[in-house]
Length: 389
Ligand code: NDP
Ligand code: MG
Image 1: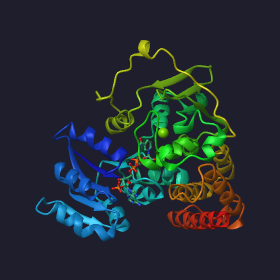
Image 2: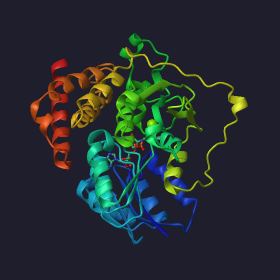
Image 3: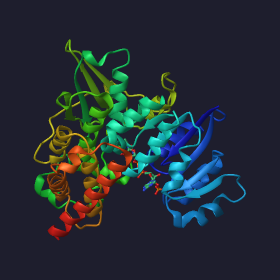
Image 4: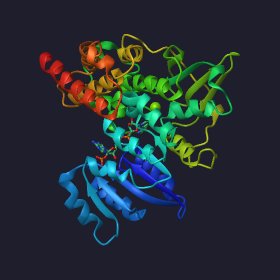
């Protein structure tokens, strides 16, 4: 039986992963499941899958988790440290699906054990790409992309060499506001931004899709994972969300990955890699769909894409600044402290204040320096928002 752990088990990616695992009874030995506030779901899944341990990120809810697991034989633990400790338990395959920078430390720990890390948590690559790729190499761990675009590129590169690749095109649905004017976007509410036209995902990534911050993170993720120059990476708006990415080769050929907008495809590919197995996803009827459309993203409505290239130009810890500023600005938008378009203004201002500073330029990338940079960028983003109040 394959030993598997799922970090962020109670979220959208975590639940899709559990859906696939539960369809193959007897194939998996579940080691650790982790969650945050959704104790009922965490406990129910840990019982159902007979996990070794269930961990909530919230220390104040340990009693509740213990109670929910009473008599099941599943251990209970709580707190950020307990989540990282759970990643030291031997597992063959680990799903990294915590949302935000909190996903980095457990993913690193799993790689240090030599596990295969199925990486949904794009923030790990954005904040600490060089570090996480190095850790995988040093410990014989492997990273398999779960973000749909990156899984698509990864699949397009099977049997190919990166030296034959000329460009990588990742697509964006355009999110909730793809047909909205700048004036309408300025007044958009969190409720409106939380309605994704095609994908069913967690709240934060859904709003990041509407602002294209999600695609900005993915441009950085592409560069870090595939090691290509960022000038090779392009973004196209593709409202149908069925062509997830295209790899362009030197001979002019484009290899496109086409599939329904269902994350179980990318998760299943990472779960069964290097094999392909039957997956419970819709089979596309292309004649019925008829048309795929593509267009350039509007740089005025989506400044996040320009910022991603500036971050890659700066290199080093700029990704950690970008992600932390973005997470803090998103909190500000969710709390109705700043408007939808102000998120990018806050992030740009934080980048201006921090990325040019000498200390960030010379700092070596370690888990500590990444986390210190993350704290500093969050603090700076708070200051910027306070100045705008
Ligand atoms: P969700 O918000 O649905 O789930 C997030 C998970 O992380 C939940 O299990 C949540 O627990 C847990 N969590 C939240 N905060 C913390 C914390 N501070 N420490 C530990 N655990 C925490 O997110 P998604 O599943 O949508 O996304 C997960 C990751 O995958 C993100 O990095 C996202 O960008 C990426 N991704 C997601 C896609 C999708 O389709 N959803 C597609 C591609 C990438 P609880 O809910 O119990 O509070
Ligand atoms: Mg994606």
